[in-house]
Image (cartoon, rainbow, N blue to C red; front, side, top):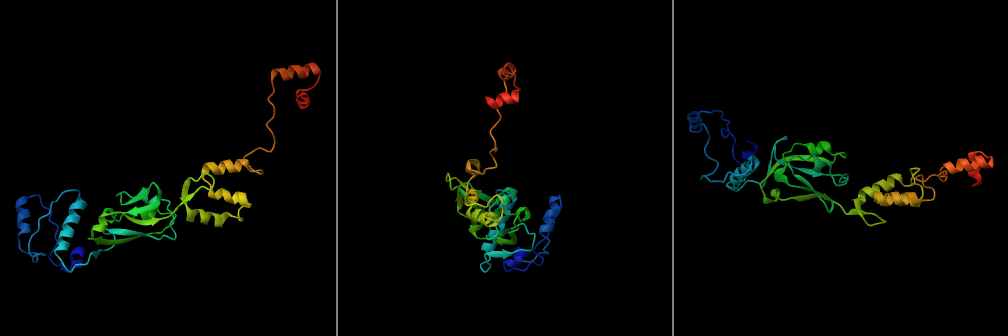
Length: 251
């Protein structure tokens, strides 16, 4: 009804659900004359192929094309199975949780850079992306987009990747790295010096290597490993009349 009304037609006596397995009763229900006149002047044929949403979209866009004054975007009530999502870019960290949660394949990422793309025609407005988002920056809008752009992927959010200052490997996003630096630099006991702050701009491998080579690194022990005791050590200590500990200290 929302679609028909949005196209400029009245929805009164237009839509009914017929549930009957008897073909004669079905034919009678379709020809009882209780429905209003046709929405278009002449019937149009469509090739009803594909999935349910494909067939439904083809029928809706065909009806829309026969309504010359209808807007391209048709508003729908909340929880309708058609619509789009919006992402607040200022709060999005491109963690891609929404891409993993989408059951319809409407959201996708880019293996070469931090990016989220969206195909409106595939979105079922289930809200899983909104629920999964840890930053709560996703909103839903129920609507039907009759334009061909609804079938094509569009970029909702994209950023330049952050590159490791040591090896140049791409990891994370620049905005996320800058946010972490502002929160930790000079405020956390492990990120006091410039060398410690620079660790934030390194990938995992280079960060561990840099930490290991720091003079005050916690990864290295403060004293050398003790010498392994052998049978010869005990025998020589016994011959010299010393304890094993004293013998090892002298040798």
